[in-house]
Length: 349
Image 1 (cartoon, one colour):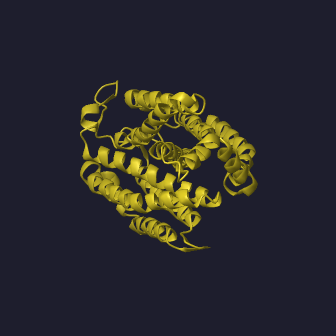
Image 2: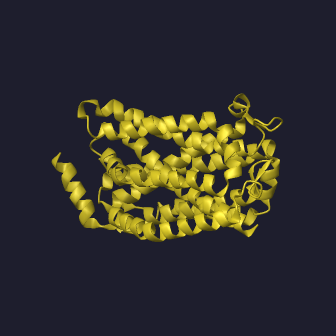
Image 3: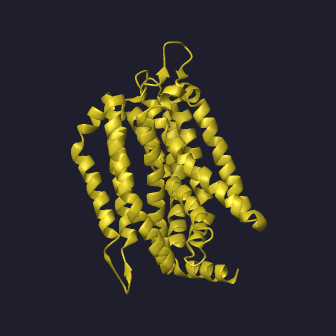
């Protein structure tokens, strides 16, 4: 039993890391599209500068997530693979389109605008489709009456809860990405772009919080079992709200620079902590079910010996890779020589 909870914790960790990194990545692509023709602010340059080294790293985590599901919970993989066949295929298609067009937009200058628009639009749809997995796992739209589990797509996409999740994914994507790009702009000393992204974060932040409240409201009606379990951790939900307030206030802190308001690094850390706490409460309430009410972490769990081999492989792998990720992040976000070199390179183009 302990092994099953350890495995689902590893899986939850992959989900959270990918969710945060992917939302920032997808959002940066969308902002690159929005500010494509506004050269004065250099907001598009900032977004592209962020996208260039990070979108490849982000995709490694979705591979690790899929491998973890199939290696740790193989008996649940059949159900997940069956009910997510259509949504999953659509997600993979959009990911392929977005990745291909993102690469080509940096090569084919004569088609840069349409390629940027297509990659930006697909990138903002993908988070909504990814989060659609959560309402599906609540069980209301999955038919277990036969040996072949089926998904009620019509019921799913007419559900208020589904659209609350969808809206939350999009607003969170734009909110987190605008915060990170504000931080990146300030570190790069691109203050016009910083003011643009700070403004966007101030506008979208409250909207994302409203979508979170809509999720709870619709969740109570459509999946009361998980709503009532989340209410048992109400203090943690208030802690999550407190982190959001700290992040919002951080955008108005004095920065120590004339005519520049806000400390976006504080906001990024606080909002990431908010999502961490909220996702913990949701994940804890979801246990022990993978897909309610038939598939649990215990019924889907692999052989304990196989799990130990896989688990220690993950530990060894991340012990090797994690220092590299830390170095990459410190170089990308904090190395002023790297940032100035990129800034000079862009100014020459």
